[in-house]
Image (cartoon, rainbow, N blue to C red; front, side, top):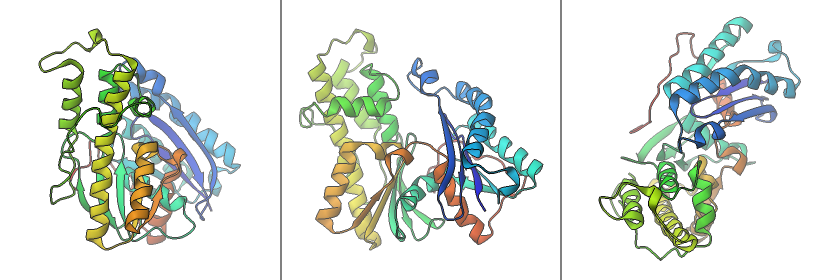
Length: 340
């Protein structure tokens, strides 16, 4: 019997119907990129209001594609953490309402753990135990994963996440939103050694990350210290490409280096990678080279499951197997997930 999964942690409204073997019977994603582009970033109130408008049509579309009725569903699963408070609440209220109306059990999903579970969905064999790297818009974290639901936090960003840094660099260079794809596209034509940007905490004896200093270094390379107005910059396309390439190289060096060390420290020969930044072509290339060089298995979430989606909510099936259901007094845990 299938489950219905709901995702509304940030700026994507998504729902999916997943069979008990993990296959996707129907799914739908409504993006909000056009709404937030004018602000060069996600505006929480705008995101929440858009979720309110889209949540029921998206759920209806997923169920219709699956060709099932509410009585066919085993459970309703929803991401309750981490994310924007208003966005999370829209998804949670919808899930609770449907669970109550249809008399179905409720399952709570950790959005970050689900990003890693997307790797399992793409693999014909188990990807556990493994080291898991989450590189999403607000999170850069490493976990030691002994199962889909048993993850020990190794370390994460202490300030900006990699995805945030991409978006902020794109904003400084006026490349539009979302910033990651725009920066990566320009970087492909640039010189990765044009600027000696910092690789913060790369050699620290821990698994924490810091990209705030890198973002500031790029800022100084664009306008210099003390300058505030980016609208007056006059950089050639090649100069922008060199900045993007050097920035991307610095981010990827740190992500790959820390992941390599974590695989060695945890003595598990498998690395799984999920989240929006996992779609970055240069990161995928460097991780594949590292896996071949160091002899570990690499599984990266498929491109269509890197950005926020409800299909990765199939992790709820693992909770159902354990009998881990939520009650109707479930609340959201908003904000960034740091330290766990």
